[in-house]
Amino acid sequence: MAKVLVLYAHPRPDRSEINQPLFETAKGVQGVTAVDLYAEYPDFDIRVDVEQERLRNHDIIIFQHPFYWYSAPSIMKEWQDLVLEHGFAYGLHGKALVGKSFINVTTAGAKPEAYSADGLNHSDIRSLLAPFEKTADLCGMRFLAPFIMFGAGRALEENRLNVHRNAYDDLLKAMVADRFDLEKAAKAKQISDVLDDFILKGEAV
Ligand SMILES: Cc1cc2nc3c(=O)[nH]c(=O)nc-3n(C[C@H](O)[C@H](O)[C@H](O)COP(=O)(O)O)c2cc1C
Image (tube, rainbow, N blue to C red; front, side):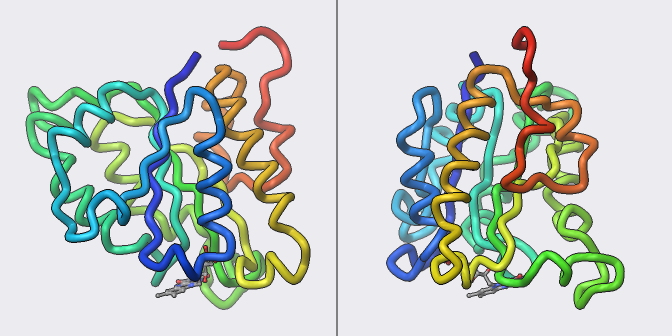
């Protein structure tokens, strides 16, 4: 069994149509620790020791957030700057995160075609998340391709909310049960609601 930590950031959860329901899904999965960073730290007064202990106690670290200005809401940057200390996350004696896995679970306003070489952004999402990937690399964590939900602003009117919630539920349960193919996910460009390719069918690893 893997221990999964969801660190969730949304600065306006009252206006969130998709991340807040997804976070409710995460809270309901056994084996998942679900933390709402803005609720816990409204003044950005992040307790570094608490956050480092959480990291020590989990195998898979999830950043769940809307895609904001090609990145994450600001508390996640503050969290990284304070929590990923030298001697803890990196440096000669900073080995606390080595061997863990990291993944962004992200909703984007734009459609999938906007995130391609020929599209509006001339880039896929994994490439745009390079700062997260390089940070995970430096800390010795395995960076998994982001789990992305595009067209987030139209999820409700297109009746997609339950599709995304079910896929997130499947993802989290597979991770907890060691049935999520971490190696394959590390090599992929992105992961979407179609998870079948990433679920290990035989014996759990
Ligand atoms: C400040 C801000 C920045 C945003 N930047 C992007 C962006 O860079 N790319 C994108 O596809 N969508 C962007 N969006 C759209 C959000 O990703 C989208 O509204 C969000 O994923 C919807 O989730 P929610 O209903 O949980 O808020 C942005 C929205 C806001 C408010």
